[in-house]
Each structure stands twice: as C-alpha cells, then as structure tokens.
Image (tube, rainbow over all chains, first blue to last red; front, side, top):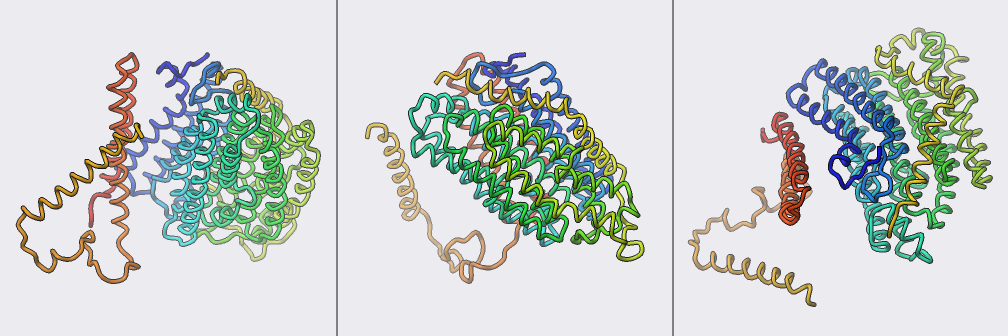
Length: 499
Length: 121
C-alpha cells in the first residue's frame, strides 16, 4: 500500500496509530476529569490505557501487514518498517510500564489517574518522533514527549527528590531543546529546507559542507546527546532516574531513549549521510559513553542508581550501532533496543517489588537471600542482569553480538574491542546482584516477607523473562523484522529526492 | 528597503495610536487621584518591598492556562489566512483539521474546568 501524503485520506491513514492513540488519550482525559478520587478510578484508567495501547499496536500491525509506506514522494511523515518496529518498542515499553505501575501507584498513594494520560501522550510523542521525516515534526514530537515525561518525573510531588528530579530534568531538557532548535535553524540556513530527504539530496550535490551546516549538525548532536544521556551530556541522568518514581524511571530509560535514538538514526542517515564529519563525533561519543557509563556504575551501591548508570552505558553500545551505520547498524540497533527495553523494564519491575512505601533506597545488599524466599522473582532479576551483561542464551547477548558484527563489518574494530572490554567491566556490577540473591544469607529473619508483585506486575515480569529467553535462543524472527526495517530507512532516503 | 516599508508603516501606526490614546485620555479624561490610584500598577500586589518573596502557585497556573488559550487564538489567524487563500479541494480537509484542533483544546478546557483550575479558592 503506497501512501501519498498530499491526499488527505492517505495522510490520515499513515498517521492511523497516532490518531488512535490521540483519541484514546482524549477519552481518558475526559474520564479523569470526572473520576479522579479513588483507587478504582486509578485502576480503571490503567485498564483503559492498556486497551488504548493494544488498539494502537493493532493499528501499527495493520499498516505493517499491508506494507504501508510513503515511497517516492517528499513528505513530513515517514512510513516505513523502521517506524513500525520502533513504534512497537514504544507501545510495548508503555504497556509494561502500565503493568508495573498498578502496585506502585497504590503503595505510594499516588491516586492521580493523570499518570496514565501523560504516559499515553508521552508515547504519542515517541511515535511521532520515529515518524518524523522533517526536523520540525521531530522537534515538536520531542517536545510532546518531553513535556509529558517532565511531569511524570515529578509525579510524586510531595517527595522532595521527585520534585528535584523533575526540575532538573525540565531545566536541562529545555536547554537541550534549545540546542536542538538552534541546530535545526542553522541546518535550515545552510540547506534551505527542514525536510530530511531534501537536506540529504542537497548535501549530496554540495561540494563540501559549509561551516554553518557543521555548526548546526554539532548542535543537533548535542541536543540528541542530552536526550539519550550520552557521556558527557549524561549529568542529569543519575539524579533524574534516581528521583523519579520507579515506573517512570523505567519508562524514561527505555521509551525515551529508544525514541531519541530512532530520530537520531533517521536524521543522521537520511539527511546527513553525505557529511562524514559526524562519524568521528559519534565514534568518540560512543567510546566515552561506554567507558564512562560502566566505570560510574561500578561504584554504585543503590540498585536504582546502578541501573541509571547502566542505562548510560547501554546508550554507548547503541551509539556503536549508530557509528557502524548502514543496514546492519540500523537493524542491530532495533534488535538491541528490543532486548534492552525488555531487560531494563524487568529489572525495574523487580526493584518496585522490593521497594517499600516512601521509596526508600534499595541497595544491592538488600537483595541478600532473595532467591530462598522469592525464587521466581530472583530468577527473573537474574535473567535480566545476565541479559544486561550480554550473557549467551539471552536477548542481550544476541543484541550485542549483532552490534559487534555491524561494527566489525563497517571496519570499526577498535570500537568493537572497546564494547567487549567494557562489557567485561560491567560484570563487576551486574554479577554482585546475582551473587547477593543466591549466595548470601538473609540479613535478618523475614527480610523479604513484604516483597511481592500483583498479578499485573507478575504478568509483566513473566513476559519480559519469556521474551529475553525466547529471543536469546531463537532470534530469527526478530532479525528478519529488524533487517527489513533497516533496509527501509536506507532505501527510502536516497532514491526519492529532487532538490 | 522596499520590503520593510509595510513594517515601518505598521510601526509608525502603532506609535501614533498608542501616543494618541495616552495623550487624549490625559487631557480628556476626568482625574480624581487618590493615594492608591497614584501607585505604580503591579497586578494588585503592594509594589514596594522585596521581590524575592513567595507567592501563590495559583498565579502560575492561571498564567499557563492563559498562554495556552491565547496561543490557540493566535494560531487561528494564520490558519484563517490560508483557508481563505486556497479555495481548492483541500478546503474541507483544512476545516476538519482545525475543528479537530479545537476539539482537542476543548477537551483540555473541560478537564481543567472540572479539576477546578479556574477556582481561585
């Protein structure tokens, strides 16, 4: 199904998942306007959110099944396999976040169903970011996502740490948006368009990149660097991830990061494929992010903070995929982001189960003896940790292996070597979690009595573990999907344009 | 210089209109000054004292809501210009798009109304 966005009907069809999600968000907002007092209101809002995400996923599936695509025309909206796969990741991350939020919100007495509306709007922003084929669309979508997530970060407004996280995230996020917008303005000044495909076409016939373009490109990279929390733009990440409510942290570490990377891929490879300068910048960003993230994570005792730094480290691995580029790099990114979303959300889900009301810090030693009391929960966390480490048999290994292949086939052997070495370093903070759970005794009798998940949380953790092990031993289906998506980004960009 | 003539005319008209109104009301209007009226206007708050004092977050809420619905109005104007200018087959689509935009804002309006954001106390 080839869509021409100049025709209103086709434009609406190409935005079908976003429209479905918008409609649901509005319905939910009206529901919340009348019902926002009791626990049941919160639960019903949560179920409606799940319904909304499922129907959005069906809309995405329908477009994917019909091979919907915007081909051969210049448009503000891209419709290709890359977008559908990325959308599934966002919707999946949002759905898992909703599942692990039920217990958490009731335990912390955050009885405001607006939480779910903001979650839906944030997801909408992410989907539009992956869909944007124009710098303006990408910027607006980024703001839609960011504003929703700023509020979510400060959702526990009575707690000072949460308010601090929201303010920090808001100020630095606004700063990063400023960089991004200035970059867009300079790129527009240098090329005369904000459309990614047209920029790509104009740059491919230009003899050499102008200083204005390079400055704009640098500012764009700084803006995206903030959003993906790459070292040295990661300063906000530990404090914000630590202070935000745990399900929101999970959502930020997975969905927001995935969306920023998806947009980064599209911008770099559709617009700036002809400019070699950014490869060097990405190379260095990837190296210092991998080294920095892993070294900082080594020193953490708090599990949440450790996961925050681990998320920085994983941004580094994903940057290797960006640097490697090509179809292999893009599909490696998609495989890895699926694995990362699952394992990171799983780890946060177990953290929620272990946490107590008032959000006291859970240190790694607090998990001592968990395996004896709660064997399934400990098993789930162990699988997530091994997957984050990149242990064979888990999806994390498959993802890393795929990134390594993409990097070496692109001639980036040094980068691949650093990835392997830093992964070895990461064992220094992932394995102590497993050791504490399985090899240390309970510190006091009945230390883990109140550790439990409700049935929704259990469903989320079970889905994560099954997904990680399934993709770990049988990744073919995921590979095929990712490869088709990678093809679509690179084929779509270069052939269509008329400057 | 040529493209800026209209802008300069607009600027000139703004200055003339503003000056005329201030000067005319100064000469034509009745003046019965009291002590309160003579103070500099500062949104109903006492104008003297430290500016670094805490004030109610409600001001902020009202300001944000004002900006939201103000921008909606501003956004309608360029839309209207384009709407009147095209007159082709996409007119219906343009109209529906704006109606959807208004609907989304209206839902937001209902939400803030029901949650009591317009009530001061």
